[in-house]
Length: 469
Image (cartoon, rainbow, N blue to C red; front, side, top):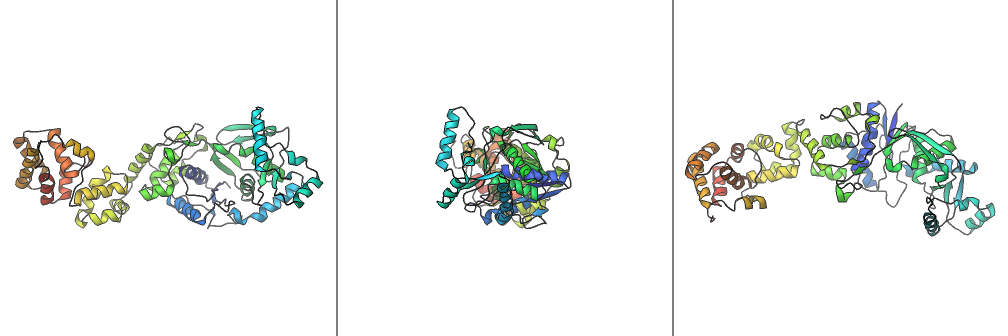
């Protein structure tokens, strides 16, 4: 059976890039009616935190990326936290040592840095030179007796080629002579990513492993480890990374956000899903889709090789599209308590209907609620500037229009055309700014009906009738 996996390290909140990796693997599983596995790679005890595991699970469930095996769900190949799998790794360390395919390395960080520096100076690719592989048994014993901490390195076979078919990039070939012997166990006894990630994929019968192209050089190393141990190798696929708006790798500086931040801001999960699913993957159908529909139409062949650029405008497009699939009550609940406290009960339906096309996030709904129902209206700098050239007499006429015609906006317009001698932008823009506090928004007749308070409208107009031109 097809099985994919997402195997994050719980060292922080999950961001867009990692969530896209989870999403692509989940969509493959949905498409192939397989299993999506969630494994926690927490072998760094100083940085791994349970709170980040909780946030991770919440983020995945928020996006409807439910897993069928792994954390909390369990299954026959657990435990699913690497910190609990040391016995498994020790078994395979011992096997490699018995086969003389792994050896103790006593090199210090300073020695390794110097070696890499010399290799670069000689125009060679920096890789471990294998010096500790040449130590005699007596030399190893003396170092161990002296208490010198040692890592465990996997011995890369010389003079070979590692070939595999990448699910995204096609045929790949790596020369083992370009790969240095790699650390598979740290000096503190903890397993290194390269080793335990590969072992767990094999032991948990992962068939497809999709990940970013920054991992592609790890793949030949992991294939060699699994082949040496006689374990099955998953099919690997390496998709393009996400770049920021400036073309540089995505980071907080150029647009990256945590999924928790996006959830807290009020992005709909469906919007995030529809955006991320298309960030580096092509769907011929560009309509809004559910998670199930995205999975049914997901094709590995449609994963791109070119960098995928993060575009907030596209995320906001899908946010807008999601509103079309929500009921007014769902939108009302999404707007939140701060909005609900400001909007009178009898204005709820009108507010949701009128304001929804003008917002992306609940914070914006709150601003509109204040504009409509707060006693004092704050004007934006742009709005203040727009009123600078408006004669105060215009607002005196506007107050008269309201006094005479109540909340009949169209009657105001006719009155002002006749008495203030203005029309078009010179008529409509000052009214909008004075009553909304902004130059853009809903239709004015509907806005006046929403505010629904003649005295409040007169106060908002009258405050500008004392200015000089």
